[in-house]
Image 1 (cartoon, rainbow, N blue to C red):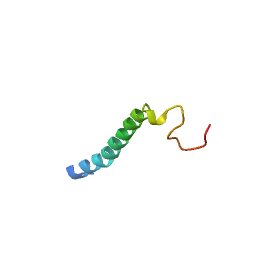
Image 2: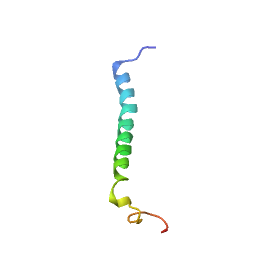
Image 3: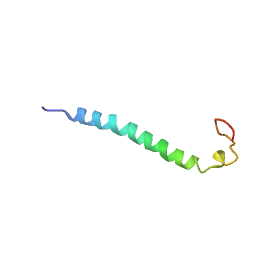
Image 4: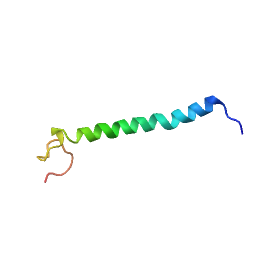
Length: 50
């Protein structure tokens, strides 16, 4: 079955764009966990207090 270059590019973008977006979110979350917002004093946490 023949496919066009447009179909190949569309498939590549359909997979690539969300993947890059999710990797970016993961990296920004990893950096955010080291900040003072998520300190041991539970400031900024959602949930029951310990």
